Image (tube, rainbow, N blue to C red; front, side, top):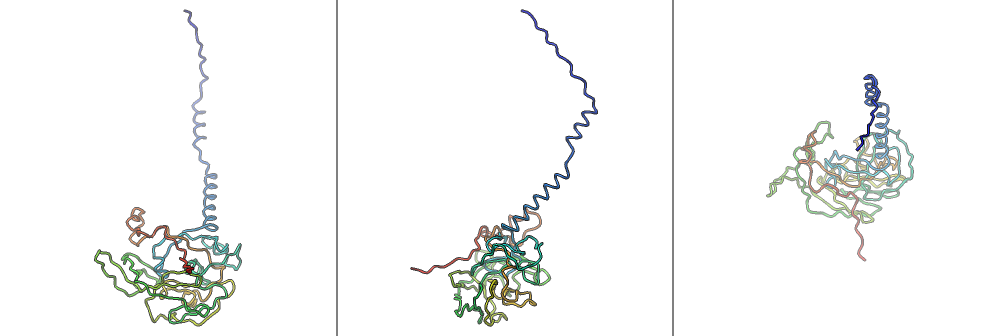
Length: 306
């Protein structure tokens, strides 16, 4: 057997300084590229919020019992077209323009920016252009016909003792305005009982309202005609809502609002917190209200029997 000699050439020595340079180059961070990527990501989020949908938080009792303080919603931006109010954080100047305009339907829940404020309110569409609308003893009269208002079993809402609202400048229990003491059910659940009615608008849109004050100052309103390009909005919690019945100086909407101030339509509840949560997200699980997630906010429509 013959042996084959293998010659291994020795590699040329590499200077330590060259290795150091290579490692330093590999570890260098492209801060400009990172910043550019972050800017593009933020622009993508803003574009989605402005053109497609955005999250919305319910801070007040004006839309009870259908929307509760602590509900987190998704609001779609495209059903009625786009305008200055569609843009996130209202970065665009207020204007009357609309792109690909659409018309809300009676019963839709929409967000609107009052002409004297920069924050969004959420209300229900009651009147559309050319509708004649009045309120008589708390009942809507639409185009000369009283809107049916049928008594329902009182809604029972969890008392949520840690649920705080700041509409009056200082934080108070959100349900203080009702002046109703919570009561304990045999199950141990603490609730407030609120007088509830069902309204049915022309076209069949139906939903629940709360009416607890027979002497509310806005229970009567003379008839007006909704102008073209406007809608008349009301809250479902009729005696605790600053809506189209309420003058601007009282923080209301001051009559019908232009569609150019409507920023989108509420679609569904993603989740709801009862006020007991803290900054720590781990506390949110115990604060979740059961049965609220994925609740649709589109009005139910009754159909006539054939």
